Amino acid sequence: MRCTVHAYMLNDDFSPEHAEAHFGGKDSENNRRFDWEDELHIKSDVTGVTVHEGVSFPLEGVLPDGTAFRHEVNNMRLCEIVSSDGPTVYVGSSESILERIEQSTEGDLLTVRIYLKDYEPWANPIPGIYIASKEFPKALID
Image 1 (cartoon, rainbow, N blue to C red):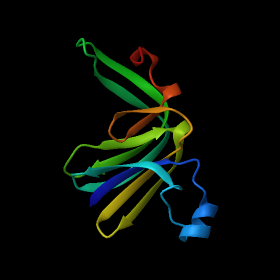
Image 2: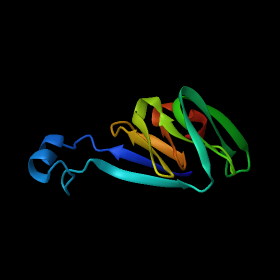
Image 3: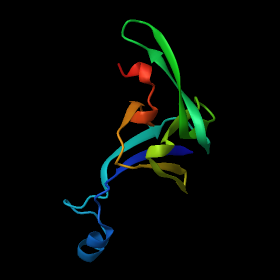
Image 4: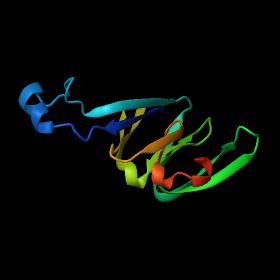
């Protein structure tokens, strides 16, 4: 099955009443439902998605000076996307900035939608992972 992940930054100033009254419920130039949208395509054959709530995500990499790091980011909601012919992929966000996650299937396309709240700063250190600033490892900020 094919899989696409969409992440949306909700616009806290969006007025559904204004949209309904003037644009048939649709967004307009001055009344956007989302500030931005990110889209990821999973290239392998996806067999399923499992949502994990309140889990840790290992953020690891190498600093510019060559030093390796690994930090656990707590209180995440992650979607584990399992493939038959590729690696398992994780997407998701800190619980504090997450509005909701939705999944739908249409034909052979599985779509995962991640809706993020817009009132708290966050970071996107790798595609598909959104971490609230207050949850981001302090050792990586300086």
